[in-house]
Length: 286
Ligand SMILES: [Zn+2]
Image 1 (cartoon, helix red, strand yellow):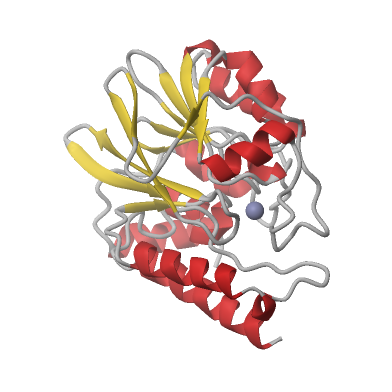
Image 2: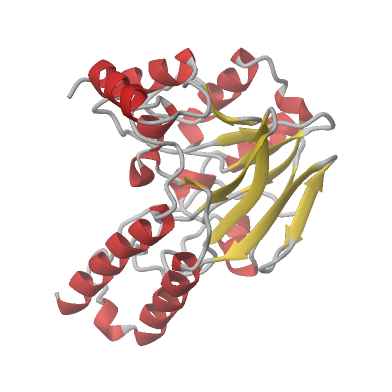
């Protein structure tokens, strides 16, 4: 089904709280069939004060507030000029970003961090495990992908977080919870955003993908498997509200933003875990 037809079908059959913005339809159209980490994407509204400023393949979110903004993830290094341009296009100033947080310490989510820290002057917080990788720029040797992926430009970490920590920029509040597995430092984030009087829980669930590269076998690493299973159980139990993910395709973000699918689905976190669990089980028997 074409995007337009899907959009019409969705509008005809579901009560949409607010119509999708034209910019999110443009984003879905530009990124149709594209998921490159640096494939340029126009900025678009997600919901309320949450804006998509990333690329076709990697999510970067701007959560805006009256006393400064929060940037969620940094994308790849080569996409930094696009992220900054997207923030400007929306009428915001990168210098007003007061806090940057990330999903996990792989180059596609923190490769652009050093440059964005410089451009914004914002503070950055991470788990101790992520901080070690981000400060050194070197992939953890325990990472299932360590044999085949590269590190990233070392970046500054201003504070170490643990589950339940809340970070503020003026009235904006964002809460961290550790969801290790994909990496040791994997972190998910939750906050509330309002569109008029319609307030929703927003949950940015980190990648849950078991991806063994090179000679890595999950069967040889029961600690890592246990780490994944604990995270799966925790994410599955969440009332995630509007689910957001570090790769937009993992949760059909563009389809939901453009109105082709409902923005919120009460089973979304369970469905995300179900496919991740299936992938881990398959990786275990390989
Ligand atoms: Zn990753």
